[in-house]
Image (cartoon, rainbow, N blue to C red; front, side, top):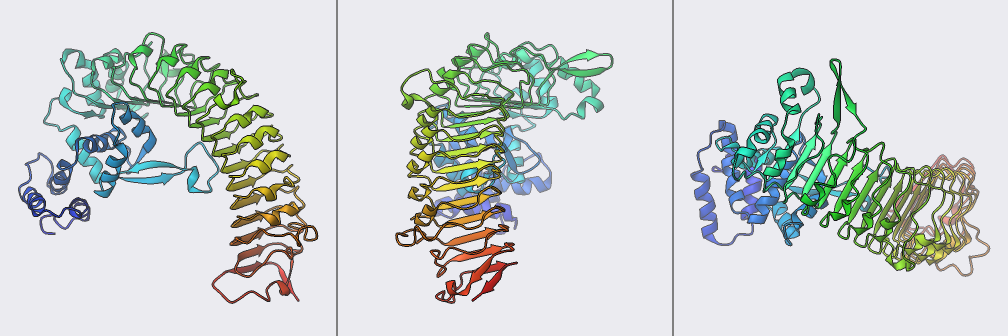
Length: 590
């Protein structure tokens, strides 16, 4: 306690480092390092913390040190949360042949250097369950400051620093790196706040004259982020051969008009072109956000190691993706938020693609398969999110060829009217969300074939009048939510036969008069035995609950159903327990 200075963060780090160490020599070594820390040219408060934290950092393995410094210095945001999810860093690290990344991350978590938390992705409006989330890193601001101090100590020459992010240092590095024989920079973050253009004219002039081609001289550069930069006169960039992650955000070219600077959006294939693609042989992560460029080069398929490609709010004049994009054999995650009108047919040939997000695309038709065998169409795809596709009228029957699909989200597809009959061939589908589709009116009859479907969520479908009569055959369905479907008058009678349903909720279905009919299914009802929670909200025409619904050990609530009346006979055999009952704005009789 005394040697840690009573600081909670230091106690946590040192404690997590020593808790599983049983050898006395390890404890003695840690105590000795705490008592005799290295001298640092920092303030007294910073020394107190960093000298203590450095003891645990030095005991980390080589890979763990690299991961921690990369995460902490590549994304220097004011908050403790990083801008990137875990998969982005994992893909960049795997390019170098590291295979124990998962173990290294757990060790860093255990020693409180960072934490992994679940977040909702920014491209999905629907927020319902953790399965729809991404995992991101979170680092204490003091740990981040220590990493910055270790990666770029002020006493070292600029070319010897591992990470560089401060704008004056970036300008100096790019200006002089051609004169340095072996620069050691591995992580480079080039960013300037927009207010800089108004208050720092001398820096602005230096930014405009930066030697962007000199990036190629940084031989060991692995992570590169360029943000809020306006690169006048740049036709293309020269990239280092080891670059694994390239993220460009809010980058435009500008042309001068009078005393003002205007964005120049008609940009050919900058920053990538046919000449420099071959330089990016190790690139595994490529992200463009709010960048003005027209199209990707035709030899884009030569990025043989590319695993993650994200293009968001970029290329407003982009006509199409390269036709040979299907040759990216290592691509695992593809996210597009650009105004494309069509997707190349070769997209279905991405054999390693696991996650596909299409958002804000004026897509009118699904790509046509090149091969006859449907098993070859995106055979590894497990997650598909179709969001804000206003021109998509229908999905083809070949959609059922997505044999490995687990999670499907269809949201804000205002022209989509129904699911294709081939939809029933998605035998591995486990979660299905359909939301905000104003013309959607029919679920295919082959729906009953989805034997592994565990969750079904239907939300804001004003023209959906009925559910498939065979819905009771969904043997694995555990959760079902029906929200704001005002045209539904009754659920199919087979609903009472669902054997695995645990949670059911229906709300704002104002035409609903009864949940399901009793007369046809009472004698054969073998379902609803596992039902744990049951909720009905704002279904103004609903009058009663089905008699086949047993209320013995069930959490249930009926709220704001003005015509609803509960028969007390249904409560007679209900034991007193901790299970909740809620009848708000309803009547009870009997």
